[in-house]
Length: 196
Image (cartoon, rainbow, N blue to C red; front, top):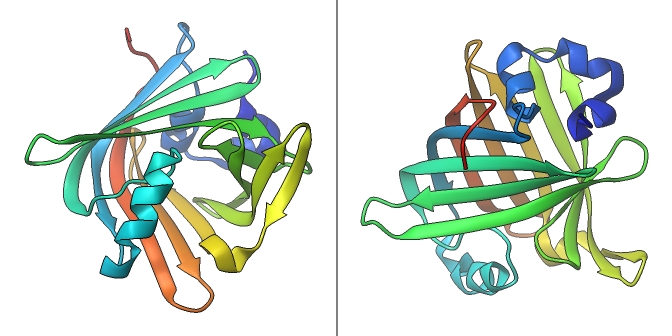
């Protein structure tokens, strides 16, 4: 079965600890599930922008600590579909779905809707899997137009194995003028199959 991350990392795939490999592998039914808890944080002034971005399918417009989170991944051809469900303490459920596609030169592009995406370059650094945001893109027809970084900010992701079955992830978006504008981070158990 096609593995988008294995393709992007090349030889680096073999360096990933078992928990991080499990995070990107699908079970025999083509589905994988991670379960854990995340902290979601951002400055108060970002609320209107995050509400707008959520309307476009991006990010999570609510703060919280230790938010129960389930991430379901499915391969569809060469696309990796992500379905994230965050259940807050008061019972509110927030979903954040996206689709990863293969980019150029070992990059991946995460689309939060058919036209808005984030191109990232994953690489292995010791025991860590890191992603460096390359650019935000707007897909118009078959072309990808670059959106300026000052508009949304620069993104980084760090993933680290805690043990053979658990990993820690940390996503940050940092604006070049006002600093960190969004972060979510948590610890997950990596599973490789589910009946969903």
